[in-house]
Length: 357
Image (cartoon, rainbow, N blue to C red; front, side, top):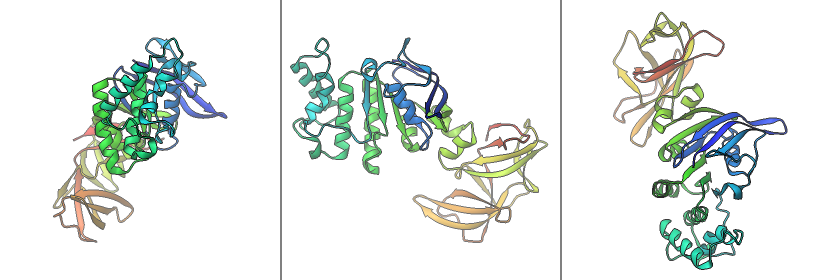
């Protein structure tokens, strides 16, 4: 089922939680809505679900406008962060609940509901637990039951709101892999909300990065990580460092020195230089590079993370170095970004520079 969001605005007491958002979701796609708290991602999910209605704009399921239809009319499957299971019902009863409460004309017979619950228990790898109650299950098992219940009604669209947020890190990692396998085997159009970038990049076919009620960028995980189109996306996705620079005659300058980055075709002016801490090359010395003094160095898993003071301690950047790399406090390190991007400082001259290698 294709879903189309067309210039949707949602206001709460004249505050715009969503501001003219448009998005096309393809049938069978797994989409992540990613952003910080207050970015509008949960509001957008609720509008798709029919739990809220847009102030203006429209939502389409296929060619059908669904903006004012209820959750039931849209046939939505919804999985919440805190499971929302019925404590007095067994696992099998929870899974079959959505089918049991259908109007009599569309309600399957009891034997079909039991068969469907058993089938879904196999799918979510909980066979043999149909007689247990939610209190007798772990957090990960409860979330599997919640997903099975959402799938039981054969939804046109499956929506998940921070589905793993209440679980510990190890269980989240396991369930992420499992959810991707479930999606690939069932093919439902799926939209899930998360503030966890690792979760979004690992799970989704495409990621929708949101900020302040709008969409900053939509793309595959590779596109979002490797080619951010705004300072916000660059800073929010993955680790990044930034330096204030200026462009003059096709060269990038940091204070009074050119740092060896070619900015041919870019208008002169002040800008911010963004790069990933691991996307650098170390230099013994240079006539064109970034150099600074080590302010802190710490071991983080299989690499060394270094905080470098640049420009007489006016700026700090982070670098990721091999663990064997010497990085004593107050020592000097020279480097040059290998992959980087420039963004003009608002209101000043300069131009957007595509990613450079």
